[in-house]
Image (cartoon, rainbow, N blue to C red; front, side, top):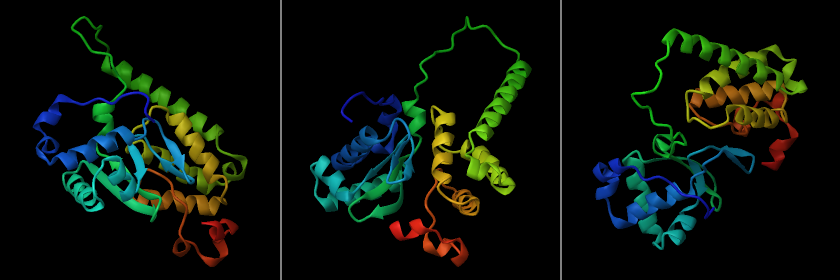
Amino acid sequence: MKNGYIKLHRTMLDSKLWSCSDATFRVAIFLLLSANHEPKWHRRIEILRGQTVRSLTQISDACKLSRNTARYALKILIADNFIVLDEPFGTHQGHRLTICNYDTYQSKKTKEHTLTDTPTDPRTDTRTAHKQEVKKNDKNDKNIPEGLGGAADFLKTWKEWVKYRKTKIKVQDWGLLFKKQLEWLSENSPEIAIKILNKSMRQGWAGLFPLKREDMTPENKIDKIGRE
């Protein structure tokens, strides 16, 4: 966690963050340093690039602030659209926090375009991109586990999810992300997997989450409900 570095863009000097209190600025920098640079899993929940899971106690302790000061700092950061706070995982496990526009300032792309770059035909780029997208979709279909691959309704919903997910927070390796998601979904029946995908798309979420009891009809309840 203490290895590596983050980027601080010069536009921060003109942002609301620069003029906020020292405590709020400290919390903001702590969250930037804590955010995932690659997708990870936390208690079977996907935590994406630019997200972190932290409790109020963890934040206040790390930033050497009182709980009330840390809580107020989070409210300011939410109001300024610096972070988005998702529903909690539990009292002691904390919330999932998303850094808004994380990829804009923490992008791994370092290539700079110059006047000597060779111009390309936009039509060629479009055709190439389309071919690459088709190959990626075919590869994703082949990665679908046997238990889900035979369900036509799931395949249709999964393709909708892949298209939808790519409009959200971007990741470095889409293939790895979708592979991990399929592995997790395969622990459920195709019907439950479809409900999970549809709920995330309906709610505008970028991740996948276990269904709550009220989301499941009696005939679709599975054993792992008792383990949540």
